[in-house]
Length: 115
Length: 219
Image (tube, chains in turn blue, red):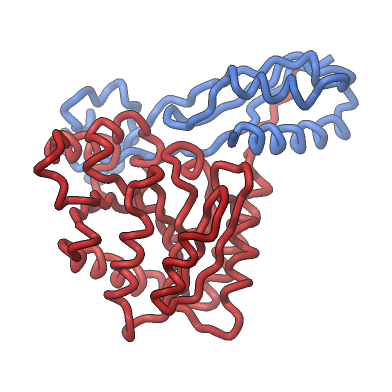
């Protein structure tokens, strides 16, 4: 159900872009969010198709881009992507195990493909 | 043509959350957002917590449910100001709804802590900032130790994990070490409290944690 709230937020942002750029159709809406956000591409696309029928948004497809998970070392302040960390929870620079995930829980409208 | 935007989608919600945060800061109130499944024991944990704070701190409660005022009635029996939000269909509380509820229960009361009991759901409430100081994940042993890995957003954001219904633990296959390891992977620093709200077991460290968060919120 929270997809509806997200689609409402998206439409508000796209309306503002339309006032600036005067496009007639939106082809693709790219969303960026953290790896753990409970944002489903299929559900968002379905919600948008439902509310956008007969408007300049009905041609739009929603694509979700997951931002890579990043961690931070509390010892040397190095930031690093999760891939480097592996299972041992250590900083790739100084080897400290005092590392914490950088929370990326935001959902962004990344970019629009319009004509 | 491509247009680069990079704006927050929930900007309207975030603006309300900021307003809530500013209001709470001005009044020196700690706001705690309890999130867990339906039946995880959020209301029972609140009831037990309110008993501990009785005559020590002034506490208010905002109850979120799809329907009914049952939780608000339970809390009202404790003699605590309570506001019930019925969302009708929505699966989460948003910052705008909570703003109205804060205004409604505040009146002339000077609260130390406001607890928000979110809609029973491990998914959607985690996506919405309501202006709280801390989200608290509530998980009962009867739900299973796999829920932490299954719903990582909430457990990665939580400032603490409260494992409830500990008196039932011997009758379940809930593995505390598995749960703890899964939580640590997502959230290396947040404390874990093991409680049984009905028996009143394990509540002291949880209450002390809330008190210390309250002291930090006043700084």
